[in-house]
Amino acid sequence: MSQGRLLIIDDNPKNIQVAASILKQADYEVEFSLDGASGLSWLESSPFDLVLMDVMMPGEDGFEICRLIKSHPTLKKIPVIFVTAKADRESVVQGFEAGGEDYITKPYDSKELLVRVKNQIELKTNRELLEDMNKNLEKLVEEKTLNVSKANEKLESTNQELTTRNEELKRLEESKQHFLNLLGNEVSGSLSEVTAMLQVIKYKVDSKKVAQLVDRIDHSLSKIETFVNAALRITELQSHGSMLQPERIDIGKQIGFAMFQLDEKIRRKQIVLNNLTNGQTQFITGESQLLMAALIIILDFFLERNLPEATLSIEIENKASGLAILFKDDGPQVSEQEISSYFETFFSGSQSLNFAKMIAEAHLGKLTLTNRNNDKGILLNFGLYVE
Image (cartoon, rainbow, N blue to C red; front, side):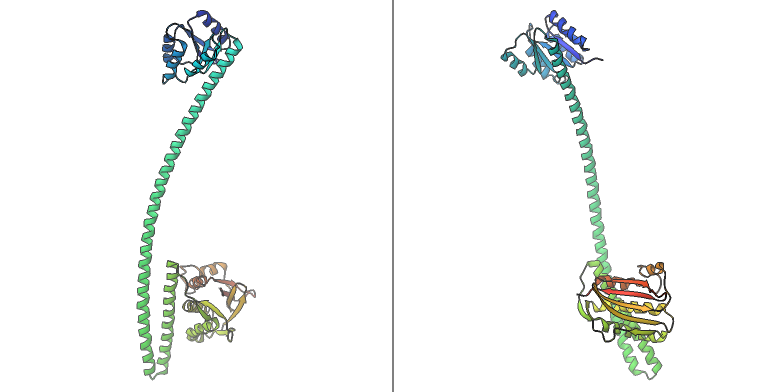
């Protein structure tokens, strides 16, 4: 296998013969030229790995030919080793200034010649490998840069689209909130008018049954108004990230007010309601309107799920994390699937606890439902944070 292809430029055939003999024995391909001009022409027409250049030649000397090689765009990377009988410092410097990579003096030392030739060819090969690696790396960097640029453009386009969508959602949210506020005001206003008229009717009628019916309608309207206002407030808290407007509330009294709202239903269903919070004074911080709605939802949940003469007890427990209002009944127990369904946003039944859960979470609390340990009844824990 060839170790490389060399061109010897020397006007002395004997020198060429000696050098060629040494190089061919080391498996190098050797060509030769007797003058610089023909040697330069050969280099332009055929690939070589190294030039062994005699310095002293008629016409253009080796230094000049080397300058021409190094100024040539396709030949300048071919290493040049000068062969000279001169070993003085000035000639060596002149050879390097002309662009030569190395020099060797005559007469030839075969080992020195082979080592210097081998070194320069290896350096040339390594430079070419490095250049190829750099080109590949540059190409890879260009590709990656292009990919990153395209990704950035896509990301920017996506961001712009998201910004547009967010602005649209914001406008829709504002429109929704505006509509809900208008609806709430209209409903509240209408309910107030109906309630006022009912009060007039209540004191004008002589029939006790009609008066009781008016009371039932009045309680129902009051309940509707509570839910409408609470729903609007929860929507506002979730839509705009606004904060609660806290007030100091006696939770025992709040439970009593909620029971009063459902008094007619409690009596009609003949539910035995043990309010173990009577006489307890326990203050919490929250929005009265929201907590009232949550308590009504919870009480109504138990009234709907139980048969007449069922027992429902309410008690307050103080815990390290805050306050727990516990609702317990002796009705049928429920499955885990049923429990999950009660808290679903779009639960289709009449016993949804999702709204009450949202109110609890708005007060940094929680709402949980479990079966009791005595194989009968359920336990609802309305946990609230207490400052």
